[in-house]
Image (cartoon, rainbow, N blue to C red):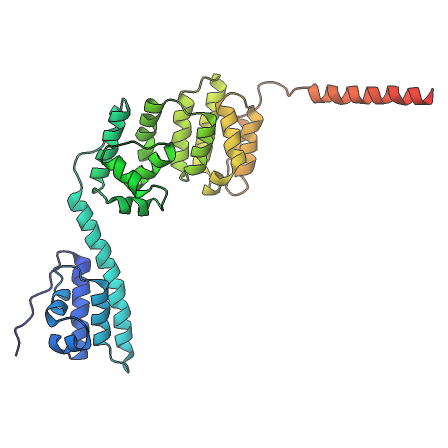
Amino acid sequence: MGRPEKPVDHTVPALGALAEHLRAMRQDAGLTYRQLAERTHYSAAQLKRAASGERLPTYELVLSYARGCCVPWVRKTEWDRMQATNLYEEAFQAVRRNRIEARASTVLPKPEYVRDQADLSGAMRDAWSHAGRLPSREMEARSAGQLPHSTAHAICKGRCIPRDFRQFVTFLHACEISGTALGPWFRAWFKVFGRPSEKTVAAALQFLWQTDERRIYLALYAEGAETPKRSREELGLVAEIIKELSDHVRSDKRADTATLRLSTGSGKTQSLLALLDVAARGAHVDVAARGLLTPRREPSQRPLRRASACCASHDSHSRTLVG
C-alpha cells in the first residue's frame, strides 16, 4: 500500500479546485499514478505534481491526464474531461493574476504633477509598474495590436513617449486606466503638447469609444477654447448630452463635426440641434434640452433675397421676350 497523498494546496483556490477534480477523476477510474502513467506520455511523479495544487501544470499534461482517466463506455468521464478543461482555464487566469499582483508596485502614478515630457514619461512608467509590470507582448495583446510590443517596451523603459494621442490612451488602457480616471491624464497631455487642432480632436472623438472619456475630453478641450462664452456653454452641454447617449454616437462623423464647429466658434445653435437629431435616432434624449438652445437672433434672410432677385430677373426676361 502506497503512502497517502498530501492534502491539496488551496493557496490559489482555482488551482486547488483543478487538483481536486483531477484526483476525483483518477479515483473514479480506479487507477494508480503508475497505471495512469502507462496510459499517458508522462511519469507518475509529473502526474502526481499536477494533482497537488502547488503549481500550474501544462495544458497538454492536464488533457492527457483527463484522457487517461476516461472510460469509453461511461458518459460521465467525457463530462469530467470537459470540466477539467474549464477548470484549467480558470486556474490559468488566477495564477496569472497572482503573478501580476506580486510584481505590482504600491507607488501610484501622479499625472496631475506632470510639467514636461520627462514627467509624463515617469508618470506612465509608474502606471505600468502599478499595473504589475506587464510584459510588452501582453501590452500588445491587451491593445489588440494597436500598441506594438516594441513601442510598449520603449515606453516602459523610459526611452520614448507615445508619438500620438491614440498610443497614449492605448497604453493607459493596457495599464487598466480608463473611464473617468483618464481625466488627469488628458490634462497632462494637453499641458505637455498644447491644445490639439481640430483634426486631432476629430480623430480622438472617433477613437474614444467610452462615453465618459469623450465627455471628459470635450470638457478639457473647451477649457482652452478661445471662443465666445456661449459657444463654450454649448460645448459643455454637448458633453453632458453625450453622457446620456448610447455608444453608437461615437461612429457618427456628422455628430463629431457639429461638436467641433461649436468648439471652435464657427458653428451655430443649429449645429447642436443637428447633433441631437442624429443622436436621438438610437437613444432617448431629453426634449427639454432643445428648449435651452434657442438661437439668439433670427436666421439670415440672405437666401430669401437671393431667391427674390432670381424671380425678378426671370420676370424682366419674360417681359423682354413678350415685348
